[in-house]
Every structure is written in structure tokens, then in C-alpha cells.
Length: 327
Image (tube, one colour):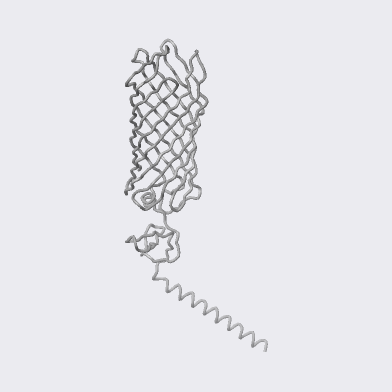
């Protein structure tokens, strides 16, 4: 009896194994006519704005399959160019453009005022945006930026001589240069990007009224620490909005004055700055054009005294407009 039960059990297990193998063979045979490639991701497309997305499977060799309607959300293959068009952001961005602004410098008993014309250029790296279409956005989001600005113009001096007699000089040539190195984290949300940044920056201003009998040449140098916040709107619309607000801490300044027989280098250690801007961006397939009204301000305290000379406390105001092309 036990032998009979054992034989029946062995026969049952053998039949199950045959059935199992038959099913596997049937699946293999049914799949021989279908692609064995597995997609590495899906590219979302839609022919009309009001239609739902279809998803095109993308394979390792770069080929694509027919579009599929997928109910659940799939992991999309990243397209850097399409992302740049939709958001205005990409891994590496170059920008260049002109600016025009009103310049006002004031200290006790005098002021310089005029109009400056300049150009600004820069480079921004966002390492969390991949440079290939088979990678996804990185979780460690950082921004690194370099900005250079050159400007020049003519100012009118309205003040007084050392004797206290009122004195005016017109069309004094001025030129300025600024270099900024910025770094900070990016916080990406559904409809906006926030960036908190800091860095190191240098500002130079050259004023030369030496062609006037009572004039002289002076150079202003600021090394400062910028701390700011940027907001970028992310939208499919053609126009988008961005804004920046920043505070600047003077780390070290020196005012070089050339009076001919008497030269002085007056060190400056205390000062604060502030700047803000609004940016209106117009997007095309290849680049973004932006219009950016801005305001810059400096408040510098008295300098150290050297050779009986010192640079008095002063304020500088700059407000105007920048125009940029981003590539």
C-alpha cells in the first residue's frame, strides 16, 4: 500500500514538472516574435495641448518604440534641450547683454552724478541638470556662477574747494569693473526654482578729473561678500518672471587718491550694500531674452586716515536696466 501511494506521488510530481516545463516553453515560443529589449525609460509626448500624454519607450541603443498610453506615472527619459525650452534652465548657461543706469555718488559737501553704459557677461553651471538624455535630475542641486560687468560714462561734480568755495566740473570720465563668483543650493519645486547663494566679489571704480586745475585722480576698490536669494518662475508660457534680492558686506576697501605731490591709500573696513532686480524673460527654442530693471546701493563709513587725508563716509546709488541673452 505504501509503495502504491509512493508511486502515485512520484507520477503526480513528474506530471507537474512536465506541465510546468510546457508552460515555460509556451511562453518562450510566444515571445520569440516580440522584442526582448526592455526600455530604459519613456519620453512623454502629446500632439495637441489639450490631449493627454503618450509615452514613447526608449531603449539602450537609442531606438524608440510606438507610443503607449500609460495610466500610471512612468520614469521619463530626460531631455536637456526640452527642459531648457520649458524652464529656461540647463546645465551650462552663458549670458551677455548691455546695461544703462543712473549713477549717483554723494559724500559730505559734494556729489557726482551721471549716466553709465556697460556690458555684462556671465556663466552659470547647475551640475544637477544632466548633460545626456539617459540621466535624471540629481538630488544634490547646486549652482555656480561667474559674472563680469564693465561700464563707463561721464559724471558732473558739484561740490566745493578746500577753501569752502562752491565748485563744479562737468563731463568727468568714469569707468567701473565688477567680478563676482557665486555658489549656492537650488531648491526645485513644481512651478519655481529658489536659489540661496553667497560667494566673493570685487568692485572697482576709476574717476579722473585731473584735466581740471582743481581735479585729481582716484580709484575705489571694494572686496565684498554677497548673500542673496533668487526666484525663477517655471512655466510653459512664453513669458516668465524672476527676481533677486541681495545684501553685500564690505570685507576690505581701499581708496587710492593721486593729488600729484601727495598720494594716499585710505583703507575702508566698514560698509554695507544692497541690490535687487526683477527679470522678465521671453523664451524661444534657442535662447532666452530678458529685461531686468535693477537697483544697487552702497553705504561706506569713514576710512582710515593717511597723510592727514581720509575718505569720508559716502553713499552710491545705481538704478537702471539690463538686457540679456541666455544661451
